[in-house]
Image: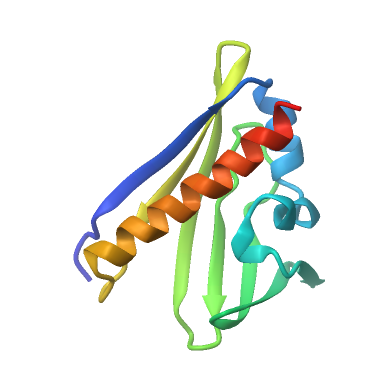
Length: 132
């Protein structure tokens, strides 16, 4: 597979990065801001299970760390695995939340743009929650 087109979707949040990471890294909080997981997550060993429009998704999160890494691998029923790179990094007294979005094989430009808009909407929801 050749290198895919990538887009970094990011947002600034006016709250210390460790607080944002502490909230966002808990899988039980993800349905509050990540609309693709709005149905909730159920723990199954080291993985978390989500029901969505594409069926059942198995999600494996990076271990908690001191670097703000929230990467997670999503495995769909079809066997397709997608690595989602998500980072929270310090920016002054606040932070930047950055999601690396990849244009998967077969994804049109329109679908890729819609996916980016969806990610930005979710990051906006996280921002609203964290800046309250």
